[in-house]
Image (cartoon, rainbow, N blue to C red; front, side, top):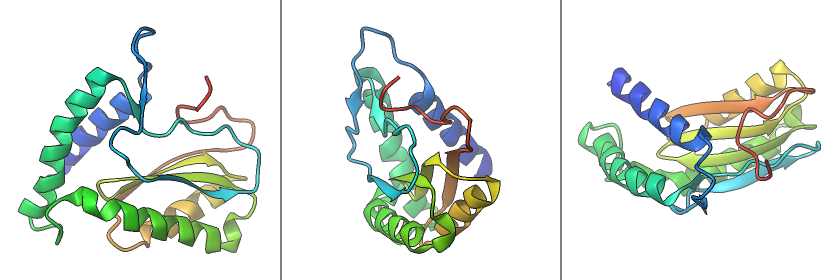
Length: 163
């Protein structure tokens, strides 16, 4: 199970982080994954958010059907599709990040997909990044938190809205 999870994550990260061919336009959030800015206290390059080329979208659609139902079939989800959790997970994660005083001075965006939460943005230091990850891990039904939070002076660790 862990190997399958790692393989799925690697595939997803490759799809999200790879630059598409110049001739293929990006489809911004074609699966309507929750994508919202949780904290806004520091200047930070905005993440691109979930984006795919048409070819990537077609390939991802197949994997989403398989991954979405495998959680339920394995008895790890009460919902018949893992993507049904995303909206409420995103709302809870955004609320928890906004409510935590230790995250003042950060700029964090949340993407929720299949009980995974991606944190993208800028934090003041490593302790603040660890705090953001811990806050979101405590949200009900979150299976995995994937932080891509940049420290002061670092280039963004995520694809940006503007190259």
